[in-house]
Image (tube, rainbow, N blue to C red; front, side):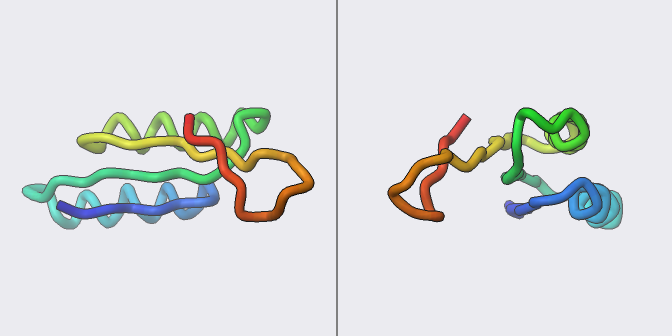
Length: 72
């Protein structure tokens, strides 16, 4: 089992390339981005289709700190 963590579309493309180099492996993905950015959603969905599972993490805008996340 392999976990891919991406925060940009470029990282998602690199992750896809890594997956093609290990065809017999199982991959899961975590993508940290903003659902208001269509490009990020597109590359998450593209990567997610090639993985066994995955989730999109979106930061929660709040005053409580920079480490708050919303699991979608």
